[in-house]
Image (cartoon, rainbow, N blue to C red; front, side, top):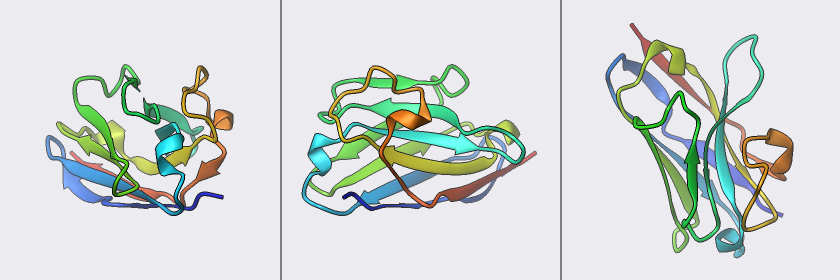
Length: 126
């Protein structure tokens, strides 16, 4: 069982930056592929970014590529999402997910993840 807790959300002006963290419990963090998703009001949860268990593979949604950077520190059992050049359309609740596997082929699909955090709100004002 993996428990995930997101933090770092908040209100920021367009063009600003935020760094989200996803802290995981347990001793198996380094075995889990992980991802960030977001959900805006009235919309489905959408893929943002993915990182394999070792950190070797990292993928991004086209909408955030070049602005967001995913990383993880397995020693600290924490994953991060550095978000730069934020836009109003980035406003959403951001969730981190963990898979029981170290690598996912279907990393863009929410059902591929076995564990989820409670989410952190990111609001970008224009």
